[in-house]
Amino acid sequence: MYEKNFGPWPANQLVEKCLEKVEESDIFILIISYQAGNYSEYYKATVTHLEFQRAYTSGKYTMVFVEDPIYNLFWNELKEQFPEFITKFKEEYGCDPDSYKEIAEKVWESHPKKQVNSHIDSYTWGFLYDLYIKGQYLEKIPFGQSPLPKIKEYLSDLFRQGSQYLRIESVINKQAQMSNIYDKLFQFTNTVLDYIEDGQIINSRLFLAHLQPLMSGGDIFYKKGTVFERIIGQYRNCSGITLYKKEKENDVEMLVLKGVTGAASDENKLYHLNDTTSFVVKTFNSKLDKELFFDASKQQLYFVINVKNYVICFHYPIDPYLSEDMIQRFKPMLIL
Image (tube, rainbow, N blue to C red):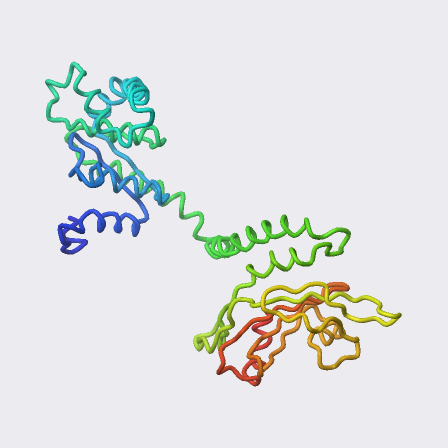
């Protein structure tokens, strides 16, 4: 069936293509009988075993079906013999075996039923032991009968479980999108709390140094969220940050530079609160939580946040063809 569904593959790409198909799948169904699949000397495993490993490491929903005689031999007689041989291997080589192929050969070679079951590939027992120690449930299927009825039962039950989530699909997707943001926020909060005490930043340099790498760039959209949405430009990663605090200098209230990082300049040590040219003063006096400014001569966006007595200014280089008019038009979207 794979030749019909997957298309022709060069022989030297067979394994890689099989693993790609596993990555593309949603469900991995493994059926085990007396043959273990084509063995690859390069990977030291069968292709089927490699496919399972890829499904396992990728977190795929996996169903494992084992024919009755194979299941009974493994579960009742062979499973318990593996630890003894593995212990001997560790004692001899000082490490765990890379695979259970050699262990399985020794286990099967010494088993009294091998002669009457010589058609069974010894690799199968190592494969099953790997499934067992990884916690995979092994479902028995009657020997010589189609596994399809049993597979359909599992798929039907899986669909029943999954269908209840369809009605809250949008909520699930939203939470999945936000989970990374929440994780970053949690890590950031735990770190910056070391630099803040009683609402005051006690180590401006480390605070800003930790903050800057998190302030990544992004796209500027035209009619975002509509069928006409398109990207009209970009702002790059934050190149620098300045931090100001309202303090009294000679009984005059000013915004005093408390910290700087990256490529931001530290030449403006303080600003009078009546300075109409300063972005940080404009934001502080506006009483808004955040403001966005554009300097055409430097081709930079300045995202300014006002928090209590602090004003923090993020510097973002932008594409050279963006104009003041375009920035003002999309300013509300950029701030969001």
